[in-house]
Image (cartoon, rainbow, N blue to C red):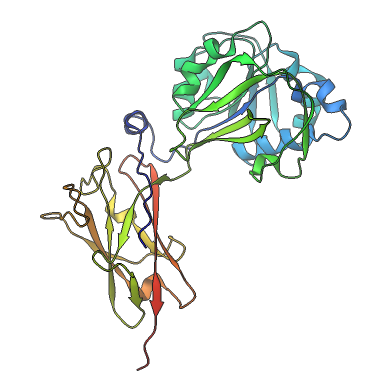
Length: 343
């Protein structure tokens, strides 16, 4: 059965990546409230803000990093958070507050932590697209978070809702994402709901909700864009005989993704197999692309080595991975039936 995955490669991201270094990994952690990492949040029994803070730091830059707090908000400047970060070996620079920092200044730091104090949204977009990381907390009370931050957040598929959620207390964090490793609960004092405005884009996602309110979200530029593939076009069973030499895989085009364009797909980056990292590419059709699924759009048809793909009888899915010429990763999968006939 063919997997009908939605193809979504944002024109904005393609344009941004085309003028910035390829493979730059920018990330955002969006928290609905400022109290979580305050001294009060650290002192709330049964919560793990220390583990949360260190998980965020590690997700941003690994075991070392130099961080800038571009805020005078208590949720980011109090002693408990500073001690956790510096004791773990991270650089932790607080201020001075500046609503219009230069991009070159922000790029001196692995991550920027924000809450309440406005910062130029265009500069923040450039910072993340260039591989920078941002932690942003809402719930500042007097500031309209949606107005202050949504131009920045919308560029990455996220948004603050205009109203506050009035959710107060220790809230369970039911997420398996790395920033919540060994974190079961965090305190908050009423925050700004978080919205995922591009649900089809796997790069942005709300991780924690409570009674329908989005509380924590992330954006991860390294997450692959989904594409639709067709293993053995014309064969609904997708049977792969391990004694055969090659298998055909088509990357299907859509209105927003023209697969045969060598600017869109870096053909040399393509890998295919049961995990998607197998170096099994033999060739891709470069002339007269075909429409393999009858939607009038030409598709990219490639040939892979079955031996190098390394399928075994237990495998049920074939995965293709690759990148665009701009360095944006993509991934698609399709069901397979693996057979090994007797000699």
